[in-house]
Image 1 (cartoon, one colour):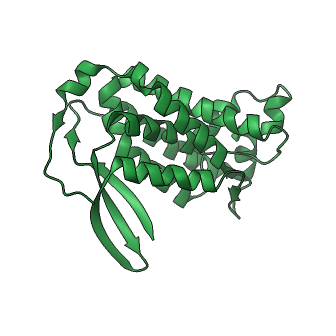
Image 2 (cartoon, one colour):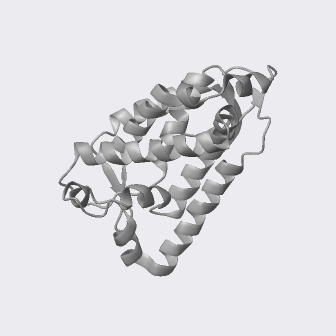
Length: 228
């Protein structure tokens, strides 16, 4: 069974999510560059923990969070980001949200480096930064209903799931996967689960510092979605 979050139906943001959309576009542009330039591009800009601990390629701490290992990787990440990003951007304001997102990604990447400092496997993906957004969402809107797709074999249905349940289960799955790195046969990169953990904890702990309570108060709240 798979669960795909679509959107928060419990509230409506009051501002257009310009940063969220810009980050999504940037990720797809970088992915197109990966497809054009191939493995050398991935190798150059993905994060290799051993290089960071050796004092090299610090820029990859930032660039790696805009790279992805496959179409399924980037689409999955961007769907999750779109489900939770607009509300968090609305709660923080565009510039604060951008700083929060980037810091979450940096912390996520450094978490992976800290736990596996001698690894030579390239790590890449926006998952750590998106995990920070999800951690912040869980703290800020734990009771919001998320319209989601439940996929059970060939059966698909729409369900409404509380963010606490949806994000909580996602986080538990990351804990189960600690220490593993998935690789794609067409890329030389991996997806680091420890980065997800680091990003999530950063988001949950620091989101309130970036949020503007007045912006949250202006959001239109609805209560017409059923519980699951």
